[in-house]
Image (cartoon, rainbow, N blue to C red):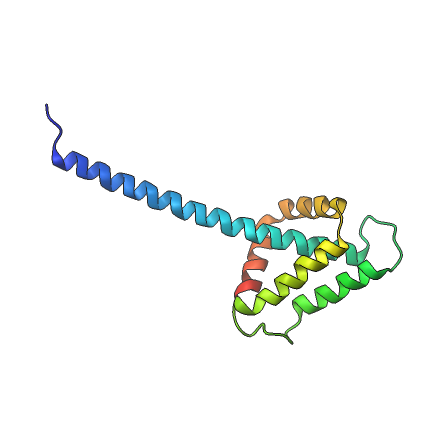
Length: 130
């Protein structure tokens, strides 16, 4: 009739497992969110560069998008240091996105990302870890 110590020990072990599982899922969700934001910003810069679904002349925003993309994909900077070497690329991407892209481009980039989520996550993870 009384609860056994073995039963409570099993319950503690089960709750530890659930806690570890939830923590791992939270970490994976954060990583996926970071990969999504990097992908969306890069796609939006590419949309600006190629003038996709826009009727604009070649202006300073397209030039900034071109220079940012060239800098991000170049091997000339500190990219030989994994992850740490990408910080400058992420800063350039952030400010170029703020300067060049509007909400319409961001919405279109999110739509494109959602269609090809797996491929973009693999590409960005590979890029970050290179």
